[in-house]
Image (cartoon, rainbow, N blue to C red; front, side, top):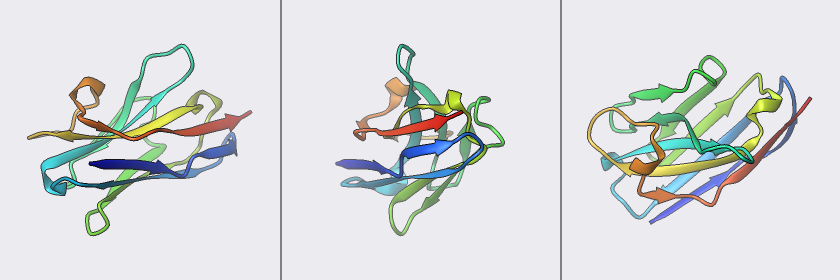
Length: 124
């Protein structure tokens, strides 16, 4: 199983970034994909997740209206479009896969496979 994030970087406040999560080695329709972030000294936070099989999604209040999660099932890739970025969005962003039934969950312990993380830095 492989989960690989890409697309992080440095951006000014108000700017945009798109993160990608490419997954392989498991049955795509059996899994939910989640995006998490962890800032220094803080706990890992589930910010958005999607069930590619039915398109159901979840957004944390902190990103609702600014971030959009989507999936390209043919490519087994999930995207996180991040707009109107704020300095408080600065963190390492992780993608993970959860073998689940039902609505996707933002709880990190539920996820089975994790990527290595990608740094997002938003300057003020």
